Image (tube, rainbow, N blue to C red):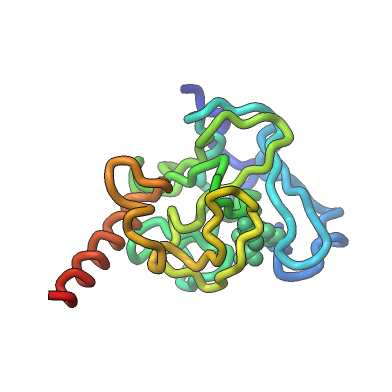
Length: 201
Ligand SMILES: C[S@@+](CC[C@H](N)C(=O)[O-])C[C@H]1O[C@@H](n2cnc3c(N)ncnc32)[C@H](O)[C@@H]1O
């Protein structure tokens, strides 16, 4: 499958952190990090903005690499967990990829190597130009700093999203789990399950 693009237009510190303020004025100076692939749809108010596809993507296709990502010591609403003890800031418009319980995208940080250029945003289903790009936050996050009530309105919506730690194991583990999650989340969930089973004995 062809890779749509692997690099954002700039690897300098991302200037688009507008989520927790009023983005309307700031959005006028917005320069997309992935022109031709997706853009930020700014909305008034806090955390209401989203990411929109600028072209079609076939299921499984790599939409973008996360090569602008940089280590973060803090766990924030904007960080992505890439390993059991590792969190990064994406430093690109991928920051605006909202959560959905029926996502269009996966953030795959575990089937490649340990470097940002190995991590990919991939189409989880066929995506049309104009579709909203979303991923399932508990697929990367074990325990989120800023839980929220999900507004995805999908039939399988989980309600409050706070990370994989408080989701039932059967949703994430097994041969055909309801939700795809990264290897570090599977590992943490398996360890949690084992601990709970031992406590019951
Ligand atoms: C990394 S930001 C995503 C972009 C964000 N919408 C913005 O405008 O900055 C994550 C925050 O967006 C909001 N968010 C993302 N997905 C959501 C959803 N499905 N339902 C409600 N809020 C959501 C939450 O406030 C969350 O903490």
